[in-house]
Amino acid sequence: MGGGYFPVGGPSMIARTIVPIIEKSKGKAFVRAPVSSILINEENKAIGVVVKGHHIFSRIVVSAISSTITYKYLIPQTHQHLVQSHLKIIESPELASDTCYMSMFVGLQGDSDELNLPKRNLWIFPSWNHDENMKKFRNDYSEDFPGIFISFSSAKDPTYHTTYPKKSVASIITLGFYEHVEDYKDKRVKHRGDAYNQLKDQWKERMLEI
Image 1 (tube, rainbow, N blue to C red):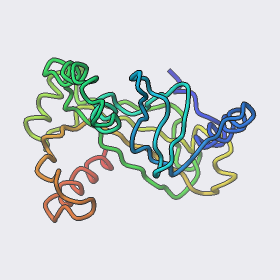
Image 2 (cartoon, helix red, strand yellow):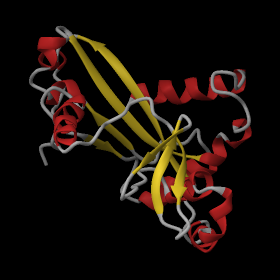
Image 3 (cartoon, rainbow, N blue to C red):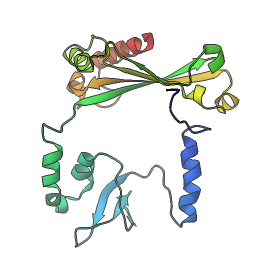
Image 4 (cartoon, one colour):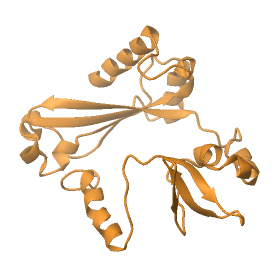
């Protein structure tokens, strides 16, 4: 396995390529356009969305966020009864997932050749017993991470060092559990206190040591 596909010029090229096609078909692409609600007609059919108070109509509405968030927060209260049976199934203990991901983006001095960065993705596990790896980390977050994914997009993109000479980047992703940070759920981002920051710093240093 030599790695995965990567767009030449970086992920932004996906948008730059597809937006002209959308506009050619008389469509529009918006940024910084948060959807606050889905518009539903008298026949209980989705007919558009509400963005910053503006109604945008469409024959088809596709939600790219989770079904739980879509049903809970984008379906108007007047139509919540239509999705309660779906929510009950989705939120049942048998389907509930409490696994989450922690991501870190690292900037490096030097190009990919100098740093000998691979184009392939790296997967690192403490053992092949993945269930046991997850169990150990869940019970004690000072244990080894149950899995680490590392990717160097600057090594995959042949145009990267033309745009950003002598620089490289790495993406590091690992698994975590919501219960490890649940105590901070009601606190604002960047205002969650010293204990939370210390926990993040511990995980950051451990991820960098891999």
